[in-house]
Length: 370
Image (cartoon, rainbow, N blue to C red; front, side):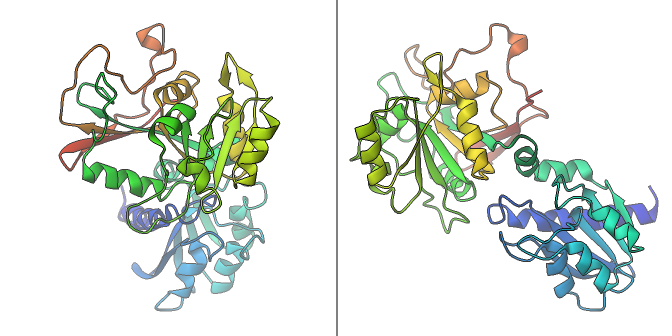
């Protein structure tokens, strides 16, 4: 690799690191970072900090310590060319006199895409593809929403080392330690929605809110409740006016129960039922229409397993406690039907990452949905 190529890669890696700072603040927009370099020296850098705020290129240009005329801009996504909540980034780069743009990935938007063509027509040398795989991985939820109009589905659970989520009597508090619970709450604080099934809602009466630090966004609480059995006295319903609460039910719900829940602040949406279970694809479609980018699924086992069975899950986040529970009657994390053959079991696109967290571990990995 030439010295110039090494420099290009180094500056793009810096742009990717900057982009990641926007996680949880910019969705449904992509995370984007930008580094402005002239004479081999960084003179400005920025990132898309919040939805509706300046894009990364504009943020970096505003923070330049010297004139960007003749400089190279390293940006993790092809600069946009349309008027949205902000003016086109292509116009800002051209007006600033930037001579070269190196972008990691293409913008898939019908309106925002095509920025490279605009830049080239203006005489700006433009290259796309440097560290493209890393950029695509960073913004996988954005690309999925753009392509499929469905959110990125993260399955999350806590278990013992032998795969149990509770004892044979149902005792489960707490399998995970304080460090794991704090980490899980930080995840809650960056997603758009948190989903559970009705059995989990009735058994645990959760709030499904972030209680760790300052959340980057307030997630919509989603409950799968075929027959509208969520009690009006539940904490989810009682707090529905303060935190968005969305209940998906079967196609013929009780009119009186639905009206009561809606009067208490809940949103109730009927969806089709398939094999006695809500059509999960229809639920994801509805969330996608609301620009939900990241969906965290916290249980129960039937919900987690069914999403896996239907190939609708994208990522897992598993907290493992250093204890052994055992017992045939002690439940595992995943319900559903499961595969008939081992070769049909869900696999990962790359080896899952396991790291120490408190007294236990957290394992994360992206599923191969092909």
